[in-house]
Image (spheres, rainbow, N blue to C red):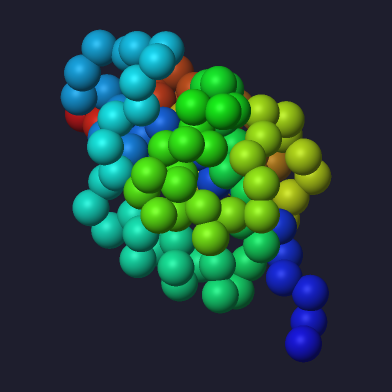
Length: 113
């Protein structure tokens, strides 16, 4: 069997309902509908790491409480080399700086539109 490629999956705004309420350092919002099925399918093909700037212990507890820990190899706050990064606050550089500047100027996270 071929080695699975590593993917970093962001927590806030990707797996949870981030943005619906005021940010709290000690509370992680609830799991988004469809996130569990997405992770189950993706983990069959890829090696998943949860990437977050939140407290790693709090994040690990949130994963366990939501029964998602089995899908992730680890939780990290370091952008380790990966095949892909899944994040709600990202712009994919496609080789053109002018187009990238335009995307940056017009960027809005999906949950604020």
